[in-house]
Structures are given as structure tokens and as C-alpha cells.
Image (cartoon, rainbow, N blue to C red; front, top):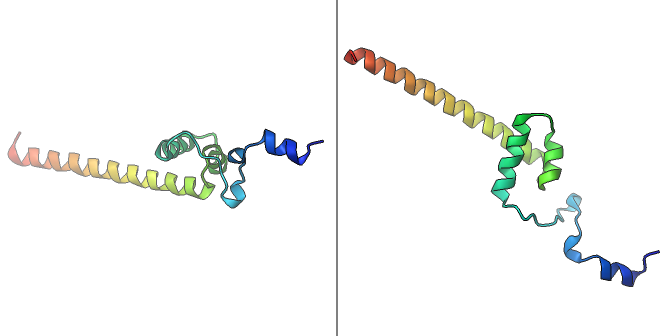
Length: 97
């Protein structure tokens, strides 16, 4: 049986976590790195935003929101590159080159 004195000696306050109330151990990895890894793993498939949120210390809604934002950015980038390529073709046709 653990006595109060044993508990204080064996467990440091900094080691306690309780994500339900926002009490989480600080990660050694930078926020932006953890965020990028969570997005990358989600897009690779085979996992859920809840599992990734727990793994990297984020809420599952945050991971889902970031994934949606990432997909929109990729769509905008691909649409912009299609427009750019199309405009180069049109310019090239007009100049005869």
C-alpha cells in the first residue's frame, strides 16, 4: 500500500498529466514539429485524429482542422500551378514560341 509520504517521494508533480482538464506534460518536441507530424501521419492514413491528438498532445478537433486546412492549401496550390501553366501555354502560343 502506498502511503502519502511514499507518493510524494516517488512521483514528481511535473510528471502528472490529465488532458481532460488541460494538464499535460510539456513535450520535448516543438509545437510546429508535432503539428506537422500529426498532419503527415493522418494524411498517410491508417489512424484517427483522436489517436494522433493523444499521441502528440493536441485535441482531435485541432488535428482535424489542420488536416482540412492542409488539404485546402494543396488544392489551392495545384489550382494556381494549373493556371500558371495554362497562362504560359497561352503566352507561348501568342508569341509563336
